[in-house]
Image (tube, rainbow, N blue to C red; front, side, top):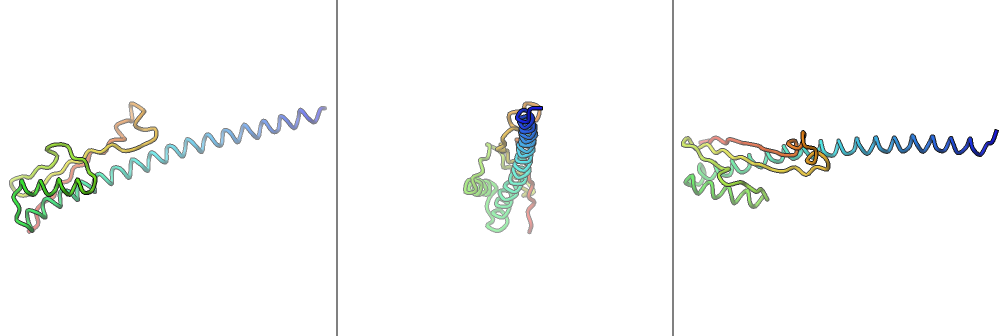
Length: 133
């Protein structure tokens, strides 16, 4: 029995298992990163929509601003926070409630590239703020 050949086989087996283990950890890391990024992106978009809507209702209630001025103040608030709003994403109803829609792309490593699940990397959040008097 040649001992040199046996030691080479053992090394190859260990290297094979280490390679498989490394690949499994890399895949788990990618999935976890994307999952955390998606969860954070959705929570951040919802929070941004709430903040912008509250800015508009506060302007109307506290400053007695017109709906048009309240929308302008809310857009300024969104801009100061780095939120990009689409046109007509802030709406003021007759009862004074404000509806804000925030659409945001979530930065992921893999999810946005996979067709059937690419929509997971998109956060579309709506918040309706009612006036408090």
